[in-house]
Image (cartoon, rainbow, N blue to C red; front, side, top):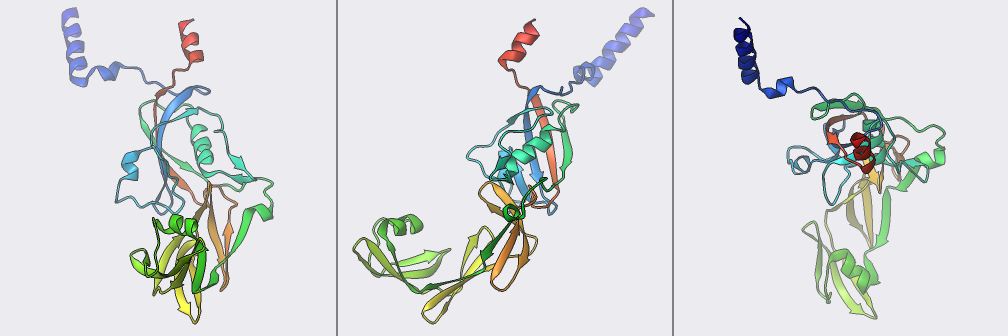
Length: 276
């Protein structure tokens, strides 16, 4: 009878796999772990990720506030603790705030298993209104004939040596004609028709009005805008101005994140503790 029981156990173990007998590992508070995550906005737009596969996924639209990196890979977080670098000039930094909110939910999470968590956007306590809002000009006017230093021209348009008669294109459309290059400056004439260009606050459209170029930013109410390491929400638009609210770390949006703890980070202190 005993042999039959042992044989039955062996058969069940073989059929279900050895992993079924492996104890579940949970993240302990205060332990440093390696984490992969990918967060999308309420509109299912990618805003932050450690996964290069999500960055390259053409079906996953990127948010205007998307946080770009030179390289993508797991991040090290201390479970249950704030991430460093959250504040700069009294504004919440987007990525450290995301990492902090993820970190606070790590304790008790199963290692190796992906989990979906929701991050709420909250206005920092004590934030002054002058730090929270920024008003920018929606309409800008400039002379059609304009002169800039040669070095600046090269940097802006990627020219090696501009010459009179050159046509400068923006997004594939003729925008400027080089009139003269002398005294270290390049003189240009704006010739564009329906020239569009992206700005942090929305698409800018330039048109000719007499001897002036009028550029209007077509901002959208409620849109996320990114300025350096912070993001905001377009809160008000008038004929001449755009008001941006930087009061929420995620521009007032709720983020949904896929999070996976890959394993514990083997620090020197942890190794010594385990040896003891």
